[in-house]
Image (cartoon, rainbow, N blue to C red; front, side, top):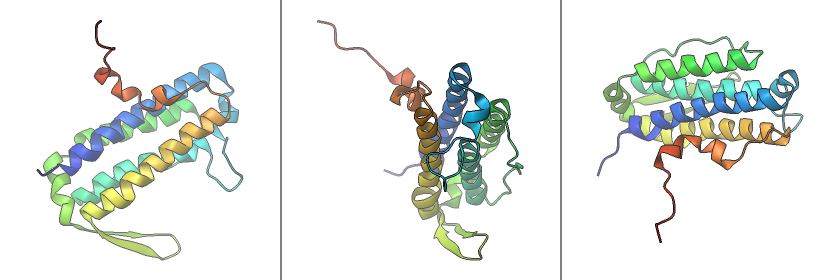
Length: 174
């Protein structure tokens, strides 16, 4: 059985980006936004806003690289929950505009990532998506979630997996 790279990644990216927006709504109702947006788990770690920006970049970057297109540029200047939610919406809109067939056609495309220091990585599309883009996206999603939890925002695993609510069912009838 073959699987579509698009179906294995894009719906999950979109779901988590929507989850971010719900977490930010809960956080805004419970804590000081100015404190949370700069919160981090360790001194050498990116703050909440940057975690969400990088997750957004990972999702749109995956789509762009696999389709051979340019991802929409985003300035990484979000300084409020409203701006972060707008960024999520822009990323979702971009992901929804991507042609699934073009995304899947990137499976054998050579993907080269060059880091600011000049080092880089070279992948085929499948290895890039499964070994780099998806893990990177969820790393930053988990970090954003952990920062909010660490700051006392009342969110839990159900909030991380809230996109699965339509699949829930109750215990069997007795």
